Image (cartoon, rainbow, N blue to C red):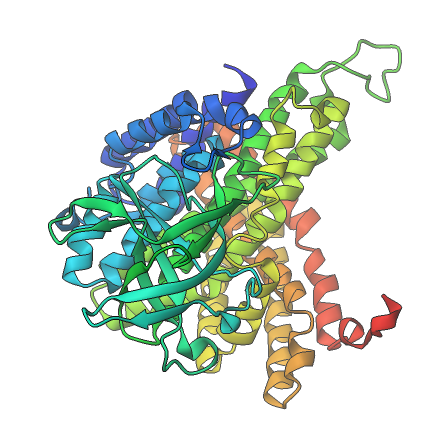
Length: 590
């Protein structure tokens, strides 16, 4: 097996452990073979063209956008295999698989080739938005062909002047006598905005109606297909959506990224999705799904770097043990600092994987809930965890990839090995679907304080419950106590920041929101590792988990507790003082 496909040698075992042993997803006999099929296709058809698509970016000749043929070939097998339809209800043309199983399958494709994976990733999220907010005609004419893989989808939020500031959007929607709308304006950073991989592209576009109030309260959502689609579903002539430029990013190079003009050359005819002025709420349904997906992708790119650098470290012979200077050279995996770098990669990648798949499990539990209390529990936890699940893996995934390069030494900086590409790919994820700074503001400024802290209290209670269950595992005493200490600090700090905000010191309370996100994120991932360690011990003692595999999980949990969780002490000490250094720095001082 080549280094490109090395991650897939162990991926099924890692995914199955999290999904079935840790999260308790039912139906293992039926679902594990599906995950195995995804891992196999990802290794055989996605990973094998990742380097080629990175080296051969999309090009535009004025009429057609050109991609390497392997992208389309891989996606056809993906669609034919049922992976795009997997999470949708059978009544909508899907396979009705649990979202947890679907996300674990997508994890394999993200690990293999995030650029190619972007096309179905966006299509699935767009189709799911229409499933919830679209009318019957929109579902039949657009959602179903997307589930079938005939149409692909995008999300069009950002504009050249606005970036993440959606309150400043200028794109407008002009009502027409026939009930449609003409969209006028430019959109920027639109992934998968032009290609010939599908019959047409369904753009979901944020814009303003003529009577729209200012700010985010005046945003509506519109469906604007690249080609006109008749009432009978027939794909017709080109709509007024024009490609005005390609953005050349440092990573994800196989995923075309575009600047689009709506209504510049001819009318861009669209349909309103949902109610007027309620577009942001609908779009956030897609964005929240995408945010968890971005976090999963970041964890999986980190996982690929970890597995590749581990294989290299086991093979590369260099240096000697400090107490055997005259002895034979040893593989670098035996050197303490290389082991530190490998362990750090492992806890970041596999911790992020566990967190994002836990979020997917909450989606399933909310869908299956038979009472309001159970559903509310899942919704509260998802509200708290979504910004963390996006930001923590996308912050620490690139750090893991940076360490993978370091394990390779000078070779890591060359294109002879995939680790430098992994880093470039993963460096995009702190920006995807809202910067990590925006996630910190959302977490501390909205989610933590919502309903008098109900969601935060719920999360803290869930973590405390795991700590109490861990009292039955003597091997995990230090992990349990370390997590309990860190959780106590987070609860105290949250109270201090909440009181400051309630007293009118909002800017001061939010000045270090990103630091708060990192602090709470570390506690949450420490919780994920405690759960993994408990499941590993249970499996080992029952003889259902291999001893070496279990030992790796238990040791990784110990490493996270001893090397990573102590950061929470420093973060709490800073946050509790309501430090204003970032606010009071004079502009001229920069």
